[in-house]
Amino acid sequence: MTKRFSASSAKQLMACPGSAHLELAIPGYVEPDRDDAAGAKGVGTEIHAALEPLAHYSTPDLGKLHRLVHAYAELPYTQRRLLAASRSECDAWVNSGVIVMIGSETEKQFHEFLVSIAALKLPPRTLRYLGDVIVYIWALFVKHGMTRRVYTELRMTATWLPSQPTTTADLVVVSDAGIDVVDYKTGTIFVSVDDNDQMNFYGWTALLKLDPEQLYYEVGLHILQPGNLTGTTVSVRNLRKWAEQALAADDAIAAKDLRLIPGDHCTFCPANPHSRGDKSVVKCPAKMSQLYPALIDEGEILGV
Image (tube, rainbow, N blue to C red; front, top):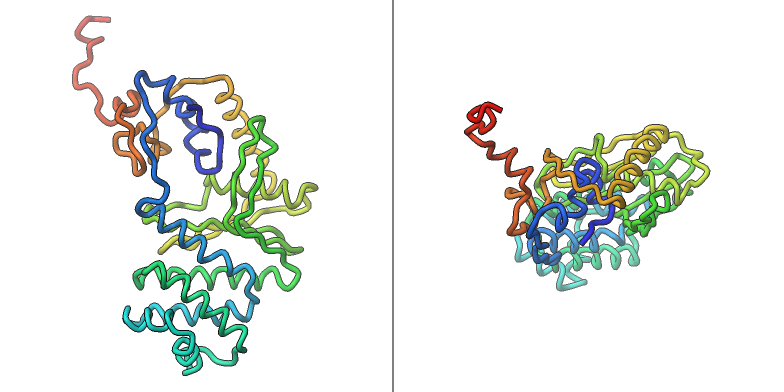
């Protein structure tokens, strides 16, 4: 099955065109069974869902919510479960001095958020991560002010590519102050926001969708993962140059370029024997040669 160019596969496909046609490039290759609800992937999906309502919070409420979540993370598990199960207990705890000066509607909103994250049975370190994410989003809301437009799970079509793949950005904030694109990652593998093909894909596609006249000079790109909450800005000029490279990769996929070019982009490729994702039975010969080079040079022995 041909893999379409996408945000998540951009790095791999731009570096290794053959990875889009593994069943053609590797004799006997069969796609592995995939379960997107298993393990860390399933938890990540649930955390994404829990964070989605934050887009509708006011800036002051976000500033209070992060203090609430950080305080909640330090409670024993039995007390966290009790607060989530009882609205009255939760309200009493909130008003005991954890945060002050909130109305009844905000109390209800905060309790609903605690219920949503309590259902996930997350460890304290992940709860602290959620608190840190809330702080980060609060800062973005402050930057963009009251005129901001906030999009969660923004569905986009990359009309700038012939294959027109679809993608979804976790959070996009737009105002006269510019445009910022946020991607939540819950995995433990460090992901740099600098020169990140996936984030460039999100940024360029969001820019064309929300600012087709390209009035902004740069786009803010942000990766929020445990222990790594970072952002950078990329000029529209550099994003346009990146898009030209992505367009060339999309053309190579359409032309069925079967070159297998191993490198650090192989991390989640199913044909990589050391893939950090789902693994296929048949492995990539180019990656195998890179990892396990032949000890004997047959050419030298045969004199050729």
